[in-house]
Amino acid sequence: MRFTTILLAVAAAALPAIAKPNFSGEWKLNTTKSTFGQMPGPSSMTSKIVHEDPKLKNTVKQSREQGEFETEANYTTDGKECTNQMFGTDMKSTVKWEGDTLRIESKTKFGDTDVTVQDKWSLAEDGKTLTIVRSFKSNMGAGEQTLVFEKQ
View 1 (tube, helix red, strand yellow):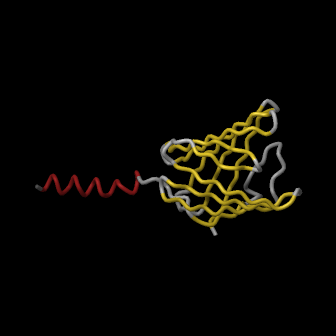
View 2 (spheres, rainbow, N blue to C red):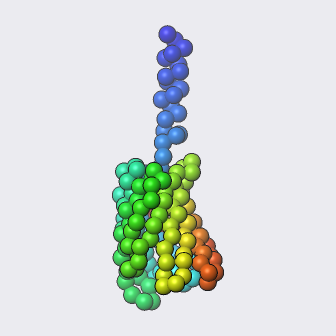
View 3 (tube, rainbow, N blue to C red):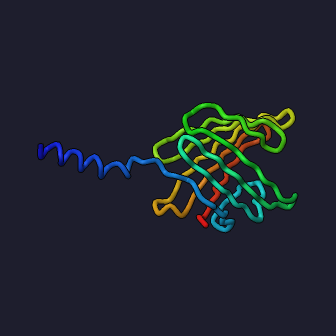
């Protein structure tokens, strides 16, 4: 009986350690902590995330030299393919957990150019910083960005 009680207490204590991060919140891009590689970065960007695993909704607003843009994407974190509209074209994505990191693999086509984007989302231990490492490639080249968001 005592052994069972101890075992249950240890298992209960370990549960928070194996719980997946929840990315829900209002996030603002810190442009000084972010890197954009060879691509110009936005002047501002916010992300509103609603995460009720396995559902994940991300609404992004950003300002660039070309104007203001807003996109919305809905995903599931169970590895099933999701389709979202991005700038007038279909983007097909699969989302999977890799430990505490969420990996989003997306493929789309702009004109005759196939584009692959991989995002790796990680949440700081205090839950106040979301880092997205983004890799992209097409027949025109490849690049990487690190986007650092702070919870508002």
